[in-house]
Image (cartoon, rainbow, N blue to C red; front, side, top):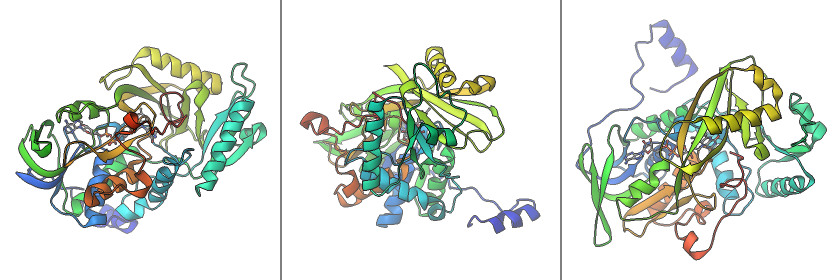
Length: 416
Ligand SMILES: Cc1cc2nc3c(=O)[nH]c(=O)nc-3n(C[C@H](O)[C@H](O)[C@H](O)COP(=O)(O)OP(=O)(O)OC[C@H]3O[C@@H](n4cnc5c(N)ncnc54)[C@H](O)[C@@H]3O)c2cc1C
């Protein structure tokens, strides 16, 4: 069934009896041509583009829990294309263009809202860095406007502009940046992939990867052995553990990142605001909750839950930036496991095991990458050539020294 306003009206009139499940739940087959491990945003979009762009069939996504239960349903939903380095900027630029057509492409309302993102700066040196970044964004074909203090005040009058430690000097406005509803992105890709014949297998944990003579043979799962000609590991915070099943050691550390949401309030914050110096960023959801977060925990962990020291750090930063936030009551907090790479940039590549591919290293920023990441991994798996906007995301760059060390995306500064 195609989703549309008319359909909602029609179903409303007849007691909503016509809605079917959004995707099918098949039993796993003994073997597939292509298996994607991980039913997060990146795994689902990869499966969708394999079927849609390359016409491939006989594809499965294996998810150990339920679709959308990982970071894709835990992030703070920021979508942007404000990268500086060649290698990153063309990839995120491609992703933002895919976002702009995503709802029509998937026939699914992912609530993509280009409300504008403002990155604040607090010194002359930072202003220079943001001016350079803005120029790089414009050269890439994206949009950027450098705001002075009064320019920021016109958009965000509620900030503490005279804060002694972090006086606001100005900001870089990225008008096409914004947010989208995170779990709807997983559901939209899942529904569209299922319609193209992809088997989405939930409650199916991969527990072993069989490799023989350097060649992939198949997978052991909690729902039996599954053969596969090609497999991609797309498991975000679990990348190191799953890759180890094939004897691989990755340049990835897993860290917890927390987020917070307040009670619903009347509209008061109409942009995404990023306060990198304080490790704090915020936006307001369509339901009215203020959604905000900070930096990763400083120690490696697989615990997908929050803790008090980082909570205190985030609350302090929020109070320093916008004291009005002290009046809001926090409803919930949660955590997700980040796959942190040493240079803050991702990996979309083959592995040394023939037939085994890897997509990881998304740090804090993999939500915005979901469309382009799936697009590029599907291209790599279907053609065995890297897509032109993802050529630099090589697994061996940490050994060869070809790093993509983008300040503002890795562990140094939090821009989300
Ligand atoms: C609090 C928080 C805030 C964030 N904010 C932003 C933001 O504002 N903007 C942005 O761009 N990014 C943000 N991110 C990052 C972004 O969410 C992630 O980079 C991205 O979602 C990771 O890719 P994914 O969606 O495929 O991951 P996931 O949804 O985690 O998918 C991986 C899946 O693999 C499954 N899996 C793991 N092991 C196995 C196994 N052995 N067998 C089968 N399945 C397995 C997991 O269950 C999981 O469902 C944030 C993340 C968090 C936690």
